[in-house]
Length: 204
Image (cartoon, rainbow, N blue to C red; front, side, top):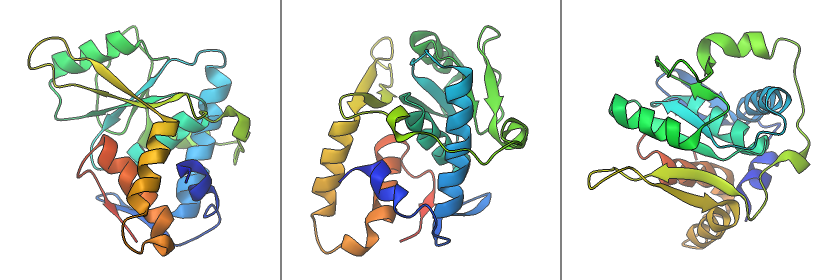
């Protein structure tokens, strides 16, 4: 089962997908907001496929940003606010992202562009809604996300997870027990657990 395709089938659903400290988000809102953000990324950074750093904590904006990145053909690098500032800077300089998507207050290195999602989303998508061609999405052998090691024994290293590897894991996980009616919610849940444990509540 492919995560993006599963979510696409629920793109018109008003069923609650996410519950975070900032409120709820339906599947429709999740798809539309990530689609709009993906369009902006695609238009502004066309030709640059470098991974994008997504910074924040316990916010639906994180998930919107994750999906926007992969819809626009970029891997994402999740970074929690609990990560020490010097390690965050090391990660950013290692990745060289075209932009940093921030779902929390953040002081980015001055040579990197930073988009503050909560305050700037409406401005960059004011002429929407937009639709992103599926051909722009990450493909099976593309990197879907990168998780950096703690760096406790040296410089943090990025572990790359391909879209194919993620889909294989999700397919296996969904085969455990009777979960067919909860595929979209579990897909999102697994996406979060793989990248940012305990960040957000996921509705079934």
